[in-house]
Image (cartoon, rainbow, N blue to C red; front, side, top):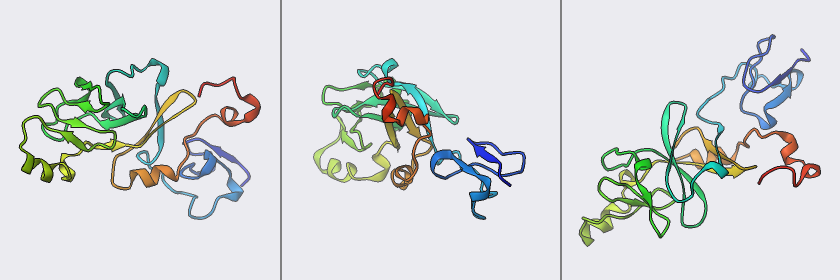
Length: 189
């Protein structure tokens, strides 16, 4: 075989690149399980924005694989990405605002979410109901794993219970020179 397969396509000899480290392999090194394995577009990292172009003081609407997302910087200084809909009435969270405490406020009914997607404030709710609702899974915003590498906001292709674990097992496909210490100081971190 001997052909090198790089990226996300199919080589002329029918091998598919996919979920493996480095996103490159020699065809002769591919196992039977890797040959013919279909690439899962939802289980991959995508660079969605240049962080220097994002306004840390307001939510930013993004789109990935046809889904609307919202990126925002939380009170701890971390960039967060949610599906762009409030769990209450599906209003776009990108139309909301970031509060002084670093939570994301939905502009429709005032639900506020922390960086983990948990609802932390509901202005119209009584204390007893609040205790029950704040831990209810359907009151949480759908979060996506996100990370900043080399000045880019990378976002995982889906939100799910296992998304944090799945994304931790896969590295973003960054240009190898950006990871090389010999090039330190030439790239934006």
